[in-house]
Image 1 (tube, rainbow, N blue to C red):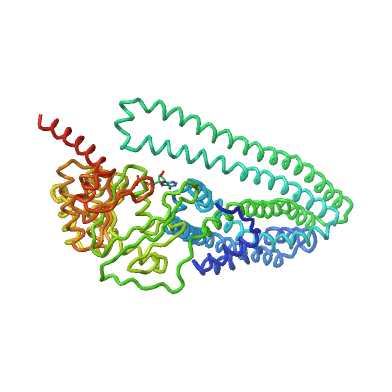
Image 2 (cartoon, rainbow, N blue to C red):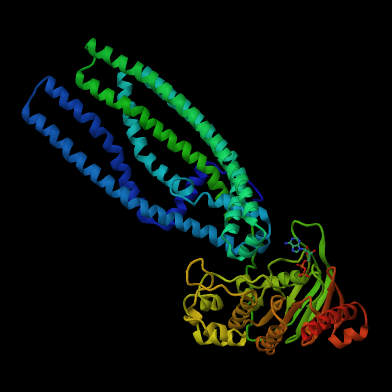
Length: 603
Ligand code: ADP
């Protein structure tokens, strides 16, 4: 995270309560009733025996005894029943609230500025933030559980203080001191746990990677042929033993605190109970009082410890809540206050004007003063070797990154003036690293579960040259992709994935078309089909076609040849050949290679 904030526990609790209140008002109504009941409950158990014993040792009136028993019985049944009922009702509500917090986190992860997602530190920050919502007992839900428990406990505890104070104020002070001492040690142990958290989550991330690699079928061939399982098992042992060692150290801290706590408790019990027995022998307190004080003192330390534990737990969780809030507050580039509406029904001209750009964590400039105009309806090819800056061009155009200097204009308007989500709607992009989801083919293409235009899905599949394959599947476009969520799912080849990605772009029917190396995983015939589909995809739309294979771009209206982030040459294929400079050189080298390849095929 850019900053590590230090919000106080109180600030964070206020934030959590306010946010949770928006998510579920019912939770707070239940909580109010729960607090009242849990604060009354302990006194029933403490006072009823006192009154019973006092009556048994003095008046022995049957009606009074029955009355006490009845009051005790009825009140304890009612409170116990409702406490149990509320416990059962509050837990699911709490889970609902936690899921809403997860939603907020995931929403941020999906919508934050793209630049953060390419920074490995963000993944660490996300993992830290996720620790605050990934279980019921720690993090945000943990804070709520403890926070709700504390309400009733504090009210009961004030009652206990009053009772113990009538016995002897010094005993009260002694008991308070003991618990505060243990509390401060517990807090130290919790702080240690948080301090080593980064190291633990780092190793967890590594371990997760190993896990997922072990079970990633895409590695299946290499795993077997190169005996990768040995390497992975070794790595697995290293990372898992690191995690175990950290956990051991943490547990040792807690163990020491519990040991000291046990010793102190034995001492304090001996002192207090000795004092009570002495009081009865000297007739300073009645036997009824003895039972009342005995029960109060016995529960006093337990209750105070539980309050302190709960406070310590909440304070320790505060560090996680800070991580969570830091992640949500990662600053995105400001959106325009009054965004200019985008006229989707027109064709677009794109202009890079004096664009200078370097990646946020890099000193190397990808572009310096890049100027390039793509006319309305033009089909522009961007070519160049790997690392020339082709993909970066797309990232800037699609606003995944902002230029360091200069501006990008869409029909003469700076693209920053448009609403970001609206702007994304303009583009049908086929990225180089195709990602299909473990959903159905139709969902993968329409990027929706509802409102799928099934005819359009089939049409897009046909245009992308995948109809034969999809029609051969029993469930057609309802077949699941990958086996992660559906064991009957289908694994497609690299080329087929690329075609499905193309179908997705066709389905979206964006006003600007971008294809980033869409033929990398295809054979020459499939490649030719893609060019034909490109025609389908474009028909009159402004489009950009990126490739490092120069032969594949001849069908474009113009070619921009990039080298080292510079636009070196610009023109039609014929013009650039005539120019007889770098493009022509590279084309001839590649042509020779392809000729060689094809002559081999003929032989
Ligand atoms: P091409 O698409 O032509 O292969 P790119 O646009 O991907 O090239 O990369 C241009 C330059 O920017 C390269 O030097 C590459 O190493 C660098 N680069 C690409 N992505 C990042 C990133 N996320 N952070 C830092 N540098 C990057």
